[in-house]
Image 1 (cartoon, one colour):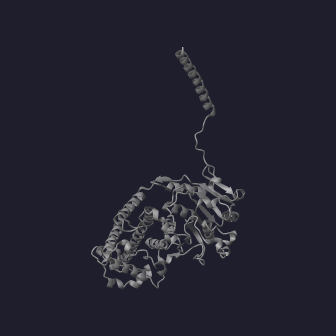
Image 2: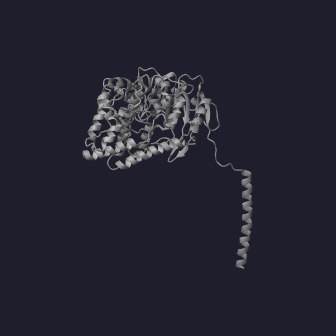
Image 3: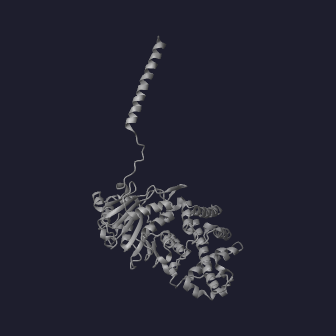
Length: 520
């Protein structure tokens, strides 16, 4: 059963974005439009978040009529230092989204105003602990770009429409939403401009339902974790599921990730701010996780979740140093240069705590291909690191219709076997895509928790048997497919055939008799 409230909230958000796209069509390329919308959305969120924080503090202090929106900039300046200490940034009342929007239609220098506002917000964090989590966040919103229009007037017209469109979005408080409004806006914008998806580096946004499944797998039996990590974090939706499900206080040391795409890296940091994750509680880095990994010196992670890019190229054995890298060297071989999938698996295993669980979405080919990938699977099975392999339905992810898998890694297994779950039919069709419902997620988690054989659905396989099968980890190799073909009663069918033959003989005799009479 699909959550009606969730779908209504999504539909309303999608309608608003679609209307904005129609207003700007023909002037802003789709992929650039995405950055403008998300940037403005972020600007609105941090303005409201900052305002609510200040107002709440004043009301608690007894100043019940206080409203930061109406405060003068001079009065606000007095609290700048204290607010930067607590929030990590500062926004003057005149530079809040709602106040800039109110004056936008009459502001002949709107583009300059917005550029100054964005620069001031970033500058407020300079030299502070929050600087690395704020620097460059507005770089993708070029308010002076010719893409918005050939003249300042034309550009400002588009900026007014953007401010009004984002301002009209009914986003409410993220705590009250059944959807991740920011993440869902991102997913919808990617879907709208699928033809331009290559510009994003081939990323596949992880649907919220898949994020929930991955999260619940990694927190199995736990009420808190030390911290959560995603080596290819995209816009951060997987990390943020932990805040939603466990509560951010139960992710004790915070949220960590790395992202190679600069635009998506900025979106991820925005998403952290938007979900009220304090700047002291997240560390999102920019760079190539496989060749320039961050968080080397950090304590291992109890929870790792990821949907890394499928079968991308990497340096592999073209870089002689990598085979000695402590993340990859234990397997004795590097993932192929043309397919980095298992390099992400080895990296995640290296970063995983002894008592931790990692759940990684995988391209199906890594489960059965030979060569170096087979040798890496051999290492993982021989050392008993694979807890479970889950076959997901096809068409779950935007950008690919492929039926992906989840590989679950664990370092402290007590039994020398691996669980295989065939969840390929656990979905419902919504428009052109398949989606996991709450019931689907519950069924998969139940099979994962019970770890028992279930006909046509789940089976526990000894690692010796996997070795005998050349370390093939395809779920279909171990979970028998149910034969849904119609069963045929051979005896009954033979009787029916005999009856048909007998009728044919009678009919043939009658035809022969008629022909004989005609000829005579």
